[in-house]
Image (cartoon, rainbow, N blue to C red; front, side):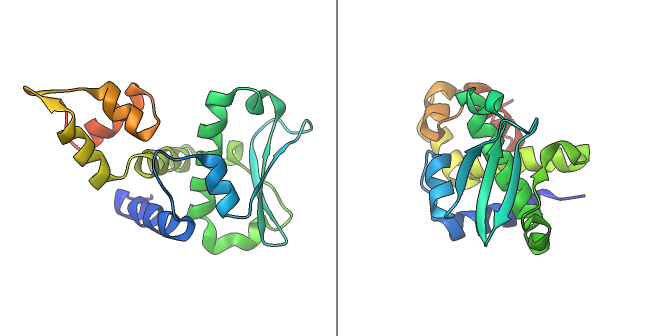
Length: 163
């Protein structure tokens, strides 16, 4: 089982390697990775693979056309890529599909995305900046990170910042 401590390490490595700025723009991250986003009408599930040491993210057209979902799917693929980086040879010209994963790893990937989108220090700072009379303006906090209020609430609950 992957722990929160391991997730934090994966996120720190990812942030350092790809010089992230917030709010995250997944297309900027992909560009920093010398990556490519491809629409593949022949697949049913998002996939990530290495071609000549370049990352290629393949999306089925139904995901590519759903812009809100596209960001989430790309981030989840980044999470799986980081968790399996030591096994990078498995990606060489061999697509890695999220659909084949255990539920435990899917949950770890979602946690990776929460931590990546809203790093603890920056998130705590945002919560404190937008707290007035014991109430936190979660709409403003969420907008700082480019996420929905429900996602920001999940992160706040995870960190014990709201009840």
